[in-house]
Image (cartoon, rainbow, N blue to C red; front, side, top):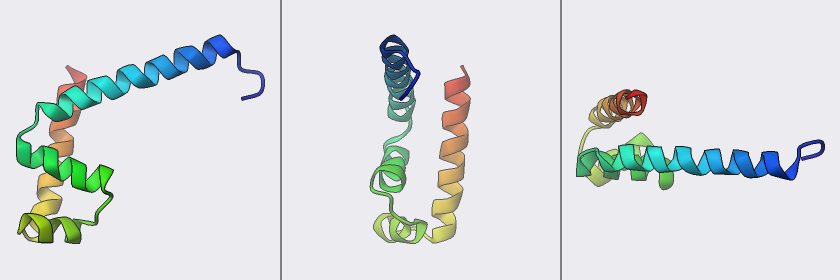
Length: 79
């Protein structure tokens, strides 16, 4: 980026790595079914309907579990 020093870019990159590590640890503390849900939604980028088929749940159940999972991750990250 123009006008941004190499040192600044290195610091920003390091911050991103640290944030990713914190998030990864928080996800790994979730139950296995929630870890799978996070993977399917945010890594595989599947729709709630597709996830419901894979997990053999209703789409509403997937939405509710996803909401609770994200809420709980947020709580863990604030600690």
